[in-house]
Length: 421
Image 1 (cartoon, helix red, strand yellow):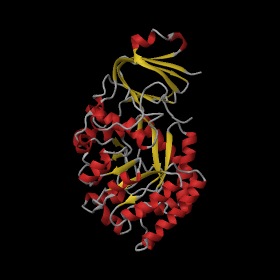
Image 2 (image 1 turned 180 degrees about the vertical axis):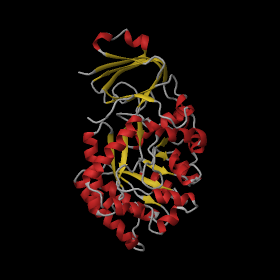
Image 3 (image 1 turned 90 degrees about the vertical axis):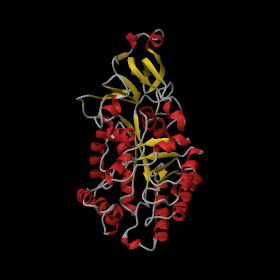
Image 4 (image 1 turned 45 degrees about the vertical axis):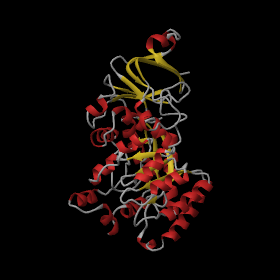
């Protein structure tokens, strides 16, 4: 049996809870000064002040981690990524710097369509090899659970191959990978004007995805010139009938009504939301659908950020994620997300931590087992090299995670690699 005690933490952040935190609740991160955590095997069995905890346990029976002068937090959850893909689009980034819009690039054959060509030519082994490297970088930044989407195949064979790669990565890598089927991610030129036909095709592909147990979630890009609200409703409703949980890319570029649809269908999360309406925000605040905001994407696209402050003040449950992908946001930098949320989205450090832990866990249906430091949950814990959570935004866009514990196993300490089982 693996037994670990983390003691004397300058700040121990628990984020205690098994459901998404709304509004003002996001500021309550359950801080314990001089905190202590007891881990046995892969489970947290006790949490409290060091003085109280050490009265109950014999330190000689445990591996003791001295966390004096360090902050201890739940492992981060990156609840929106496009982890598995082929090729890159650095040239398009340069086009955007010259003033080309994301939609104009898509319309001339770039964007997702460009990634589709490269992804279809990428083998399963290549997906796995690059996926391992990407997960290594994520876990080094404290990410212990990550969601990954398909959506760069747009055909049966490649969509399934992307999801197979994620299943394999989940088995061989320490990071938990939550798979999402995003078949309706874009409309290829041959389906322009035949989007309804494409939705029917992807519903048919989804039957194979479900029969092979390759995904937990279904997702769709509900956006002008992509898929309408009605097409999105049809696809997601069919996904729900097949037993998949739901996500949606909503109101990123224009205000279309995807946010409202997310609440209507009971989606676990509505993501992007740069153009979410006042009505949509109000509906989110009255639901358990998590508003997953992706500030690094707005940063890379030079767009206005989602209205995080208004959402939180209205009572929404907000999560943050990287949106790591080959086109609009080729970064998996959690420290950058933290800096942008603090500097440009008016979020407090406490709200940011909640958004990257228990709320992000709720966005992937994991909040009952991870996302907080409390008895009975998985021992997914990170230790910072500084004594306070306030160093997270202060040391802007710099990784300050010193130690990563995943499922009760110390798998990442500075200067140690790899993170593979």
